[in-house]
Amino acid sequence: MGFIELLITAVGLSMDAFAVSVTIGLSLKRASLKKALIPGLYFGLFQAAMPLIGYFVGRVFADRITAFSGWIAFILLGFIGVRMVIESLKKESDPDEADASLGPAAMLPLAVATSIDALAAGVSFAFLEVRILPAILIIGVVTCAFSVFGVKIGNIFGARFKAKAEFAGGAILILLGLKILLQHLSILHF
Image (tube, rainbow, N blue to C red; front, side, top):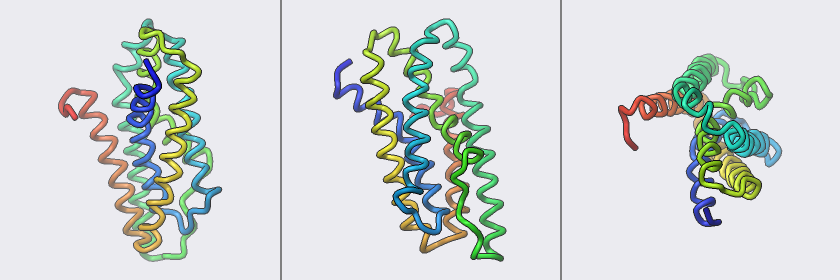
């Protein structure tokens, strides 16, 4: 697998993290570079670590992991999305509420949920004899960049729409989780 193929793979794997980053940006009062880098680093590191884990786990556990990956992503994204919707309804009455949390308790489930597909990609890398270190470096850097950009984009719109934007962000996470589950169950094919 050459550089172009790895870059295309990295962009594809980073799309879930980008979408979640936009929703994070929607619920931030101000997205400084430091705040935008937090999701970028979480998502970039997890998107790089999961293919590495998948690469070493190999085919033995691939069937077991992929059998539940859609459900895991659905549950994590759905839970976080519902929480965001509930918080947005509270903010309707108190618009000066604090920013969205960027702490480990909020970021770890999102990072896991958006990187499960990368685990399966890592398994395929092992069978394709892909050089894993350049692959995970490209995936991590691309995902980090897309995530930082996503937070900034989301924040531009979130600053204008506050609670409504967080409600929309939560709904997007729920729908993203549902889409992943429906694809996993082979109900959706895109």
